[in-house]
Length: 372
Image (tube, rainbow, N blue to C red; front, side):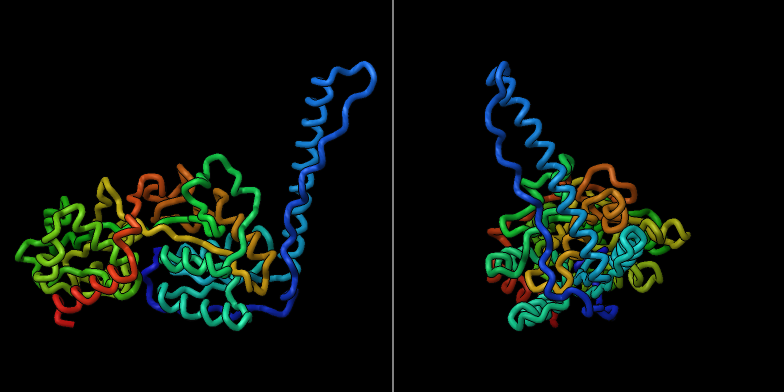
């Protein structure tokens, strides 16, 4: 999904020829408070009038500053995003953004681990390719944010009251744009009675025909297994793995195998909206307590197109940008067409349970239980 769990896809070439050294323009500071009053004007009236003038002046200055960013972004001509979100969503985002601003979006979609390795090299060398990165690995985002990898995004849409900055923007400036929602899926030919909960995956008739995600792909997948234990009990994952499931590196590939009948059910697929609409023999369920991996987007401090990066960051929080990136996912804004929920309704992981040691231990246990 839109997802943090996808296979590698080839990146479009990045056009780094223009304005590599440009510095993104920031909003002008608020005008200083006007001095007091002319003869015959009360102090209170003067203060109120000055405050109104200051607010208007600051607003106009901010609008002018952001217009400068837009103009410079168009001169830069392109912007590159590294992301583990869904391919369809990213391509739609690129198409809409270019139609609005005339700025090309180059997309490199890969799993978090591979993207993180590239970002580390680019930051340490000071030779950036990525302008924005969208990752579900919260630990990486927090750690690298503290190490100076990111530049704060400052566009006007961050001030939208419908966007909860207190929960969706962290101290280092990374911000939530969507969440990859995992749905329980099944093939309606193999499981004609459907499924009501994850517990149905333990049916002996499904042995060898259940698909599960590979926890090696991302810590967020490890968190999904922790979620299953929270929902179904601490012995659920061992019982699930005793079903000899097929292990997939992506919810997308799991969905494809489900549609083709190679598996009968899957713990984690993208909401199969398009597949059902096209008549594929599949169905899905998003549990009332939904699991979702929040995608934290970050403007890179070594971005070769810093103004286009700021512009894309702001666009991601518009209704148009949300309809692209959050389709079949959890949106960062409420009431987004095509989203299956919004991030305010998705379980928040417990970071104390998702430490690097805990992730490593679960992966080792998983490998031992699956014989791999």
